[in-house]
Image (cartoon, rainbow, N blue to C red):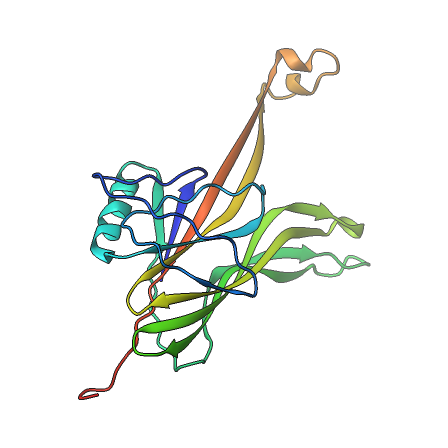
Length: 235
């Protein structure tokens, strides 16, 4: 299992390797991923903060690692983590990464403010089931949380706004092959203000002493899952 954070768009092949054709989005149905190839070439999804999963299949893990390394050096991708986990047949495995966002809850009558936390996480649940000698049915569930801003409530308390996205899919895959989940889009909008102190707050003339900067950052998260059947020695 790998997570790769890329800029929104198409992840192209490197060194002449062919891309894999994306399979149709599947929610609750089994999709057999049968197209062979080496690189990833998944189209960007339409939703701005959507979780429209696109499935693809890759073989040759060494070539995949080479391409991810090349994309990192080009500044087009960043590998977030490479966790490994073992589970039994038809048992759920969970991988989670994220942060606890602190916020202050102000109380009445000048009491000491209470600091609380709200969780924002990316969580992946995988349930593999062995079918035959070398095939697996893999059920995948994704939860993706992102902090999108803050809201001020009574007494000056500020609460973080968490956008939550969920998706589920199932696919048939061969032992040792890699399935790719794309289409997890996160877009961040930022606004900054610079100017001369005091003068930038003058009515009517403030624009002469102030500059506003706006930026948008759109990223796509690609998740690579490589299930392997662990066989007993001598079996």
